[in-house]
Picture 1 (spheres, rainbow, N blue to C red):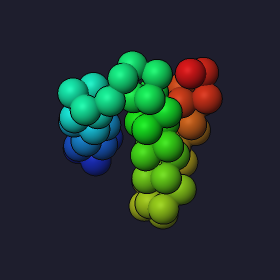
Picture 2: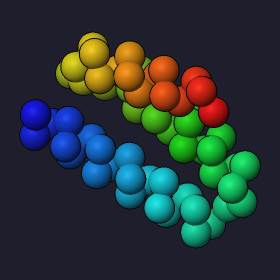
Picture 3: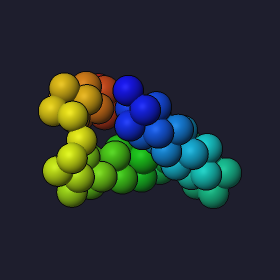
Picture 4: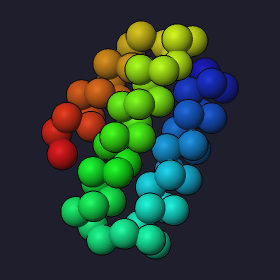
Length: 60
């Protein structure tokens, strides 16, 4: 559960950082690519969490 909370905070930090530096459309693309890259490179991430993140990202 702690890992999920840390991941959520990590994703919020990425989103907040990107919102400052790029436009809204570019922000979605950048955050989507970073989340996808993070999920694919992290073998220790819970499979259910990976599916949720990828499904959420694919909606944008």
